[in-house]
Length: 338
Image (cartoon, rainbow, N blue to C red; front, side, top):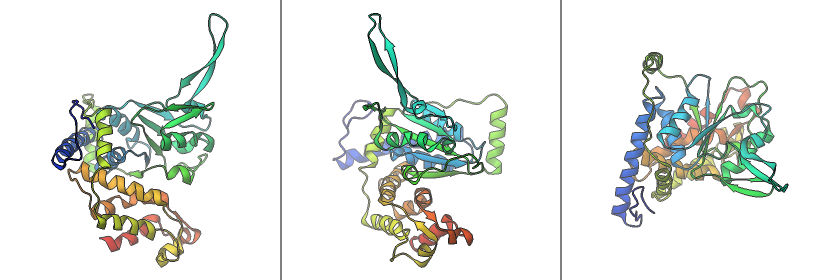
């Protein structure tokens, strides 16, 4: 693997690999600081989004209007040096509006042929704004792109740029006229990131910074090549047996089978698939690297359990009738790991 300056990075050499990891960690810490200088009062959200991208995944941002979700994605594109585009999902949006379509053209000799015009999905960072407002048919147009990193139009394969990530947003309040995301698509999001209100001090900083007209625009800290190198490095970080055991134990305990706890059997309709374990393995490595560590711990598993598992589980009617939430169920499962 080559670094951004063209030098060869030998990850088989522990000393060389550690020096490269320190360099990557430093760059991502600077990226986090640059984003936090624009997005006030959301350190956990910024960290989880960076973890998602560093792990090579896609993120689902859920929050009320006006909490800077769109601004966050725009800032990410600039700071990370990625080509970013935005799609506003509406009920009349069609799949071709996302992936592109073929048009019939005629040359000067009268010969006709089809030419493919790429849609906005051909970028490195795609913001799918209010994704649940589009029909299931349109939502499914993103499935292949999110998982396979290419689209197929008229039987022809078109590869997407590298890296490619989707950050989708969803409003938890206005559900009338919306289409809930199917489980197959939810499972393709590495993490569900809840965006909440900022604290008073952060909101005051935001109020003053955005209304006096002297905001400093964010600057690029990374580039796509460094991003892909960092993603490759994440997959090489070692994970201890204790951490692997914690991941498997937590994911398997959230499934309502015969070996599950009474709470899970009584309240959980279906639990996380093995893809959740894969998401854990990548996300905890990314979190460790983002914090300047080169091996994840059980604390990383605990910290990321909610964003990784909450959209991969569903409660049954009994749980909803008794006021039980997925958060409460997960907190109970995590008690044995704290």
